[in-house]
Length: 114
Length: 113
Image 1 (tube, each protein chain N blue to C red):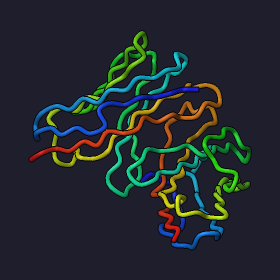
Image 2 (image 1 turned 30 degrees about the vertical axis):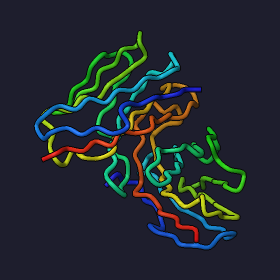
Image 3 (image 1 turned 135 degrees about the vertical axis):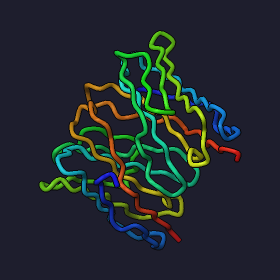
Image 4 (image 1 turned 90 degrees about the horizontal axis):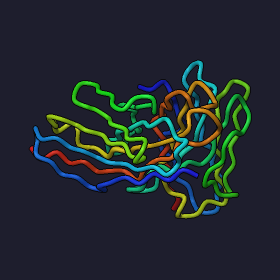
C-alpha cells in the first residue's frame, strides 16, 4: 500500500457523460500527478498540482480538468466522454514540486465508457 | 522536452537467468532515473532509482546502471523468479524545475518456469 488513495475503483458510464475521479495523496505530500493508461499502453502524464496550484501540464485534453483543494486532495474531471477515454487513471504523489522525491502511485480508477 | 526510449518491448527469460532492460534519454539535464514495476491491473511500484551523481545502484537482485555520457541507463535483474513477471517502466526527469517525469513505453517481462 503506497498511502495514496483513489476513488472510485471502477466507473462505468456512457458517452457524453461527465465523471469525477478523486485522489488523496500520502500524508505530507504536496504534489499530485495524474496519469492516463490505456489498454496495454504506457503512462501518459496529464497534469501536476503542487499545494493547490497547477505546476505542469502534459497531454491533457480540453475536455479534462483538474484541481487540488486546500486539504491537498485532488479531483480529475472528465467531460463529454468518448469511447477512447476508457482507461486506467492513476494519480501519484510526492513530497515536493521539484520532483526531487519519488512518486508513489495510487491503485487507479478504471473508467469504462460505453 | 525529454524523450525516453525503452527496449525491448517484450522479453522472455528462463527462470534463474538474468534480464536486462535498456533506456535512453534525450535531455542531458535529466538527473533522476526511476524504474517502476507494474503487475497486471495494479499500480506502478517504484523498485529502484538512480541519480546522476552515481553510476550504479544495487538492491538485492536488482541493479541499475547509468551512463551519462551516452545518456542511457539499464535495469538488471539477476536470478529471475516467476514473480518478476510484470511490465517494467523506466523514467527520467530533472530533479529541479517543473519538468514532468517522462516514462518509457514499457517492457513486458515474462519469466519462463
